[in-house]
Length: 347
Ligand code: FES
Image 1 (spheres, protein in one colour):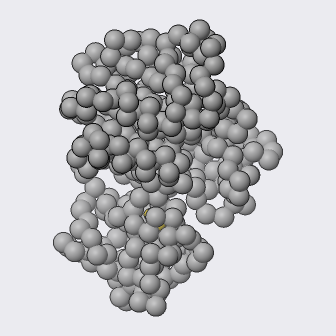
Image 2: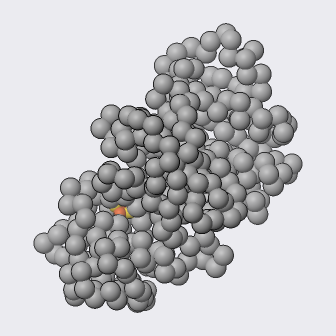
């Protein structure tokens, strides 16, 4: 099917395969169509069909509250073309940056699922073809028998990656997490689309970096820190990671975070914030490379970062209330410009 997109600044044409979501077809063609979640919740990918018909793959998508179907509006991440279509997107749309990792459909095999805490699991996908992505990006993942895609950030970082590592929290009502946690899924074939997301870190940034994450939102931060450590970024710049969990029982990756910190103890600081309990006396002896504090992660970060916001890029990830609280600190207290606050909103 031929797709014409008329944006505020110019028009684009691309082809979409039968059943292919229009957002994914456009991104695959190197057109930076608007999106945030890629999975039907945020409404950012809203478009209007002015010619031709589209089929909605998920009429109950939460992001549908942002569209007016009676006026031809729909979510590009949920709809496929039924014939040649012409769409209007009420935003400026540009071609993907030269050198950007262009998203594509790919597939792989689920391996090495392991419980990290009572409700967080890690797993890997061995890809059928290598994939390039930037530190901090995510993919959307579809599992057999589970309707639709879910977004997960990569934990690892590697160019030409043959394996992607992920974290999943067992969420009540979450269909993918129910599928993953309910039985051994080793060897299951997963479909993926990506990489996606703009909360990316590049070693030529030239700024100190601040990462504020809650729970499994630490996934993308691990990728950013891995790349920064690989590139010896903290020989020149400072880095702070604040990792919020409820209790010590909910904390994970402390060994990996310790090893990052031990490589650059003078310039990289890692603080685990416990919202629901005082810091146990054993934490400092068990994890001498890490700091621990009682409080919500945005409050712990605010206190520790006071007066340190110059020349800074911030990355935020986690449950939406934690992300919103951290964004308020970064905008109102730190007075960072929007360009220096990076987050991808998916939940
Ligand atoms: Fe489509 Fe979020 S609803 S990108």
